[in-house]
Amino acid sequence: MTEITTLAGGCFWCLEAVYLQMRGVTGVVSGYMGGSVTEPTYEEVCGGETGHAEVVRIEFDPAEITFGDLLEVFFAIHDATTLNRQGNDVGTQYRSAIFFHSAEQERLAREWVARDPAIVTEVSPETVFWPAENYHQNYFAGHQNQGYCAYVVAPKVQKFRTYFADKARA
Image (cartoon, rainbow, N blue to C red):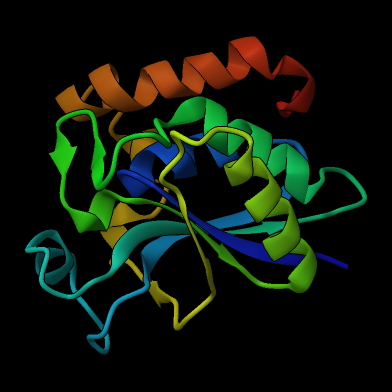
């Protein structure tokens, strides 16, 4: 049986590219969560007025990888200490957030956040998930030479593969 969690850590392309390479992850969908607009578009979310964060909805097999493992990678591949910002991506849509799907996920998320008083990661219950437009799904795989992917996404993927080789797919 699989579980689902939803994470926000800046641009969803970065998180998606990493988690698609993680052993035990059975699916990743980029999308939007945490806002007030029904069926938001990328342009609306990027405008910063909807309240949504760019997120990845991760389906995983807890027999192969734990929620704690997902969080370990999450906190290693993005800066959880900058409010509403990841590198040059600025705005509430780029905030660090964990949208938990169970009491156990909430407990573990709050434990991780409490480890460092500098962490600004929001811990909130899941809300309505809106999948991003099709062209955002698995974006990195088809655009590795595009500037943003080459200079922002690729280093995060490499960091994952270097520091978490034991959690990477073969």
